[in-house]
Length: 347
Ligand code: PEP
Ligand code: MN
Image (cartoon, rainbow, N blue to C red; front, side, top):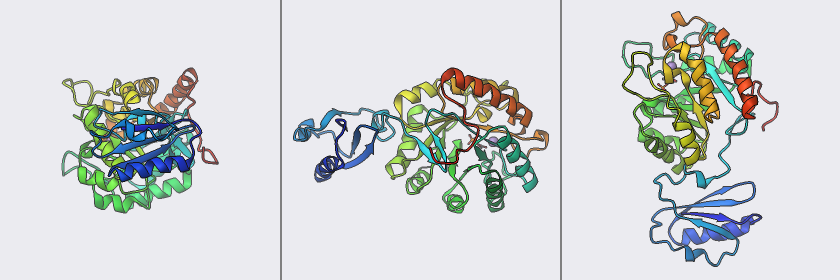
């Protein structure tokens, strides 16, 4: 159930409602919007009567949610969640570009690519230090050394870092190094990891499992939200379909406007894993933004033939530069400017 206040309701009035909900043995989650408060009520609400709130004249609306995802549901925060990462804000009007190599491979490789993506307007650097590979014989990532190199790249460029945590142990190692924790497609339903992510105070980008339905994906986000971490980004990274001859995955563009109607969480689009081939990445990046994505995450490598992972889908820095120009034009059309520099002050 969701209780929405009238405009100009005070904090004291809201705490009366919170108190009442707690006395009924239920759990309130309060979101303060620009004009209104929204209180989601969790627990066994089936028998809860709306008349319980009749004594509060400042309550405007009471809605029953039939969806299983309560905290991820749009009405919990109808204005949309904006997630601050240092001086950036994801989920606002501006389009954010996260870019970098699939894997951190060496200091030289990471610094070259970090400088290139920064020069062309990326505002978050990506790079995997712990890699989920299909084969145990493939490069598994540099681990701790990779995190140190990411930090070095971030210190030089000023760009915040996104990197993948594969397990609780890796997550703990990453807490002092990474600004956004990426949870990969293969871990979308790792419920013990999701519970742990609910306990941290750091943004989490939850990628869609390669065969996950939208509802399963939102339920995974719900695990993190229910644990108390409200900073969740959803990342569409393509799903498995029957044609794997010409693309690695199928970027599910439908999911973007569907999510916009179902959830308040910001949406990131990954056209690199979503397609698997370089020539498909830029068209699908543009399509992802046109469909309503709030941010993109794109793999870039200046020597893709030598890349230790995902070389075939990496954009060259020159491709990336062109893509950024195209996105900037698209942003003008959509009245959603592409952010190409980290603001000095938080938005
Ligand atoms: C990645 O970002 O490099 C990655 C492994 O992504 P996914 O989990 O979407 O496969
Ligand atoms: Mn990759």
